[in-house]
Length: 468
Ligand code: NAD
Figure 1 (cartoon, rainbow, N blue to C red):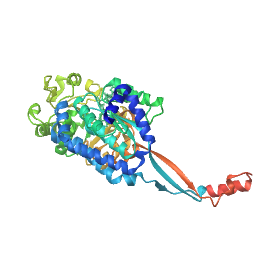
Figure 2: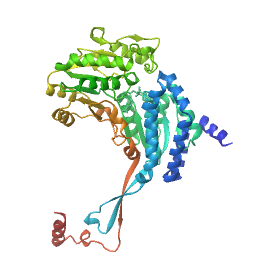
Figure 3: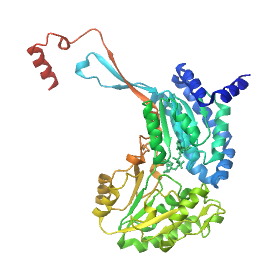
Figure 4: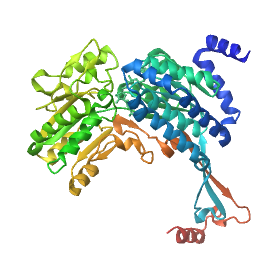
């Protein structure tokens, strides 16, 4: 009977009805209890584990991603977040004691982490499970309700998330709304207490503008062109291996993939040689036939990427197949900042190599561009690491590795400037979905006379003596 009633609500009410239900549910205070949050997190983990086979099938149907890579780059992160939240949510939710200043004597000061309330999570398609569900885990841990909007471009993974969540959780607490631009626009026209968006900088602007109408706080996880610096003293074999892995994982469709390489002229040729060897070792002679090399998500992106391959600049790869939406790992050499491939985030398996001689000049070139989501620097020299980390603003990154910073939940993950705002993962995810409510608990047995009139010179002197 309840199920039948629920269906009617869906058909007649649409998303505004869901949001109304979630608002009422939140006002009932159920999500405030840590016990409730723990139950939901455990339920979430159980549902994912029970249905892993369906998750693998759906992502394979979307873009040919293998079981191993799906586990390694999607499910591990979600399970890790859930396990950590289960372990820590009680501690995270406790009011935090802070010192009380003299002016507030006698008193105690506390910071309360309270849930924002009704939240919206909009996901991207390239890691459809973790980019959508990791923030949902944080939102649950922090005591919110969530409307979840996966990307329509990965339609099978969107459908399986909708099925698993909508069939196993009450819709007034968690609900997956599938759909594309019009459904997202519809959601953005509603009032939420927090919006968490992962996607392009272009759509990030639309989300930010819509949120501003209701003064809704937002976290924007966006994209950008993430550089990798390679210096002459770097271990070139390891550098090439880690860049090749980070770039061609998910066929380059990774927000923190090294977008392009800045290599010092002294080692350019040796680096290119190592890069070729490593790509061959990691991806094989014919990645198309290899079940662990994913395809491009759709024809539109395939066409966009194909146009970025300048035949005169191919050092390695360049083969494409429109039939399989497949692009082989491709390295372009002799690239300059004026080439088309350097205009926008590539988001595919094409790696431009730019040569440099002068450290100051190349740092200035990078600093003049929009702030990247990630930056990687390969060197053993402390002075170079320090200089780049000190001078260039970017979301996050690695020294002598690529991508792996995001796998450490103790490190906040997020962009800066046009690559985003706010961050999440682990405790930062919990904080991202919590308002920090400051409260002073005041004792009543003493009241400083200085607060009150008359404002005498003596009182001013005493105040100055205390403050200064
Ligand atoms: P996208 O911006 O096209 O889509 C993201 C979401 O926005 C989808 O759910 C989509 O339905 C919705 N959307 C699309 N157009 C819209 C519109 N006009 N109005 C309202 N909603 C709209 O991004 P994408 O193609 O899914 O992902 C690729 C981009 O996301 C890349 O730039 C990549 O760098 C970035 N990204 C960032 C992160 C991160 O963690 N920072 C992670 C993955 C992807």
